[in-house]
Image (tube, rainbow, N blue to C red):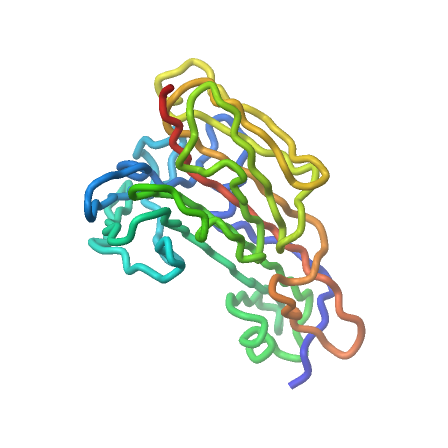
Length: 286
C-alpha cells in the first residue's frame, strides 16, 4: 500500500509525557527514587520506587508503569531488574550491583501515535512507522501523526564512579553529565549538557526542584537555561534528592532515528515531536 501524507499534525499527550513536562507548581510529575546512589560493599543492592505524584517523592497519585525500563551495568551490558511490581501508588524494583562502577537506570518511552477519520468514525492507533503504514487506510481523512519521547533516569554507583553509561544514545532529549551525577556535593557547582538527537539543545529551559516540597511553603525550584552548546550549571543549595526536568515540543522535525512518518503520494511533512527528560539526582553534604 502507499504510505500516507501528513496533512495536519497534532500531539496527543500521554500521561508520562504530560507529567514529565508539566510546569505548574502542583502538577503531576513522574519520578524514580533510589534507596541510595552511592553504595559500598561487595555486591550491594538498590531498591527503586517509581510514581506519578503532585509532591516529589511522596506517593499520593499513581504508580508509574515500568514499561520501557532498562538497566545498564558499568561495562554497558544489560542488567535484569528483580522483584518488579506495582501497587496503587507506586511501582518498585531491585537491582543487584554485581559490577563496580556506575549504573544507569532508565525508563524510556518512544511512541508514534496516529488518529484519523474513516466513514465518520475516529480511529486511533499507536506503533512504529512501519506498523502505522500498514494500519492506516489509504482513504484516511484528517490524519494526525505525532511522536512522543520521554526519558526518566537515575544513576547509581557501587565503589568508584565510571563514565561508560553516561554516553548518550543520540535519540531524543538526553542529559550528558559533565560533572559525574554521583559526585554532587552541596554548595558545589555541577555542569551538565542537554542534547537532542545528539546535537546541542540550545536555549532549553531546565527546572531543578529539591524533594520534600510537601513540607515547604515554597516549591524552591531553580529555573536555568542551556547555552548555545546545550550546557548549563547548577549550584546545589543543600543536600538531598533533586528532580531535574526539561522538555522540547511543538516544532517540526524529522522522526528520531531517521524514520519517516506515513505519507501518501505528494509531499512528506516533518512530524511534530515532543520530547521530555527527567532525572533524580542525589546531592551529598560537604
